Image (cartoon, rainbow, N blue to C red; front, side, top):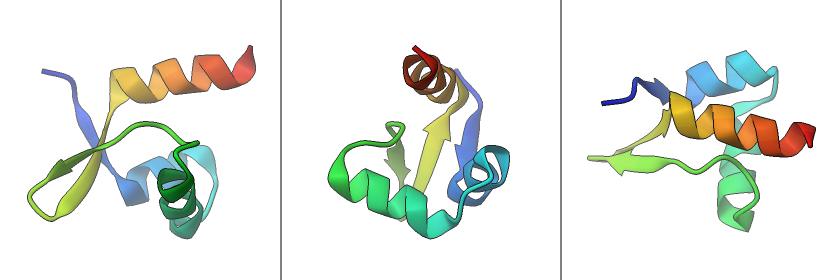
Length: 56
């Protein structure tokens, strides 16, 4: 199973505010995430894939 990151960890890694991640999720333009209970989590592999797409 892939390591999961919190919204706060992803925002720190990308250097963006947490609210930007929420806005991207609402628009469908950010990295895909999953809901675990009441919390959003980002799979590291999915985040890396999304970053590669952005660099292309």
